[in-house]
Length: 171
Image 1 (cartoon, rainbow, N blue to C red):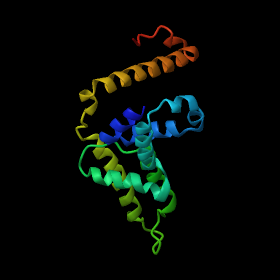
Image 2: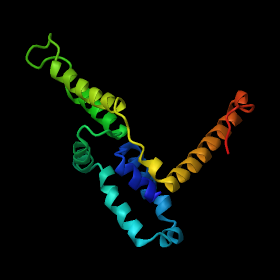
Image 3: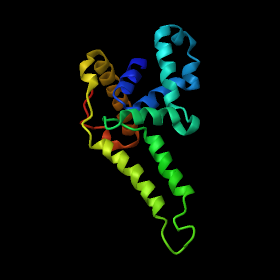
Image 4: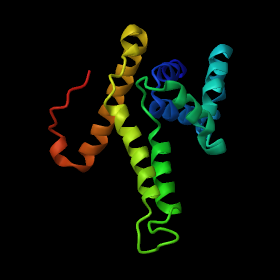
């Protein structure tokens, strides 16, 4: 997983990076001492270097700095940060103008527009496939994704009978 997190950072896929580092920081994973003892010290150091990106410290300062470094380079922003920004603007900035309450506060809507257009612009970029150059990492990802899909479909088929005869194929 640490190699996968590094690949996500290299590709500027912050959503996946946050998910991986958050999972590896979870207390139940931390209790697996025998598993962590088998992880090489170099891998642990690399993970510790990536974890601060997902910390909420100073309003995700490390993450925002890393995103600014991306500039126009394709990247996938951390969805939780984007949603938090939208919520923050919606809840803290008045819709009505502060001096003239019968007028609309266009600063609020301009800020919402900026956040949304930044997010949408990421969708329009050609995202590089660094994983294609790393066949071992690609294989690991495919295996884990297939296991996840089979698990989700299995759980859903227990609740939704029409999925029991599903045509979803898995290795």
